[in-house]
Image (cartoon, rainbow, N blue to C red; front, side, top):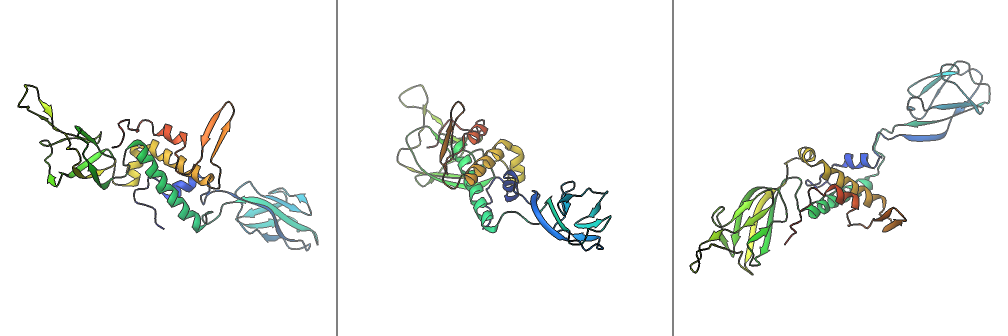
Length: 280
């Protein structure tokens, strides 16, 4: 599976947020290193320990680095050879050389990131990464038409009942707000102008491009709060995908974990981007 081009965060960012990327430390609790023969000074660990994390034991006695042994990468050299038949064990942290996620985890995370991006976009009525959009709408007789996504970068075409309309003549575009407003028109019965409406029950087709930037990295720099909201939603759904739907802590509040429901933390992050105008 390939991550959707419109997904606001990439796979590595998702894993980093979950703290399970390839730089995370894994722990070896009791590695059998070998057994002393009274003469051999050198032994090897299965992995290179994170500096300062190694605890090395000979016959159950903790050894002291530089006093009892030295270590280079995964290779241990004792100052004095371990006694015959004395067991040598170790525990330590190490950094894996490969991603700690399985392939099926990647597929799941890509789905969750794409879903979280879309849910966040829908919540605030915006497109994050720029893309072409075609909307098919039905006129309601009102004077304004609110597009499903904003900000609008370019408006390619607007047709009403099959007839192409002309910008700044038949309608005015407010690009940041994502609104198409019908113009004022002179009334033959009054000295006061009247609005031309979006004809009721007529089909309207709008083709436009919306979003903040054309690349993921550029978009992230413009809407960092949306990046964090997507990560929060993704992590929430990933960690609670096995059946926990909600919890309530007395004196603290409640949290909904249901798949498809944006966490309250994500909604708060999107507060400044949220559109209160609604979607037709």
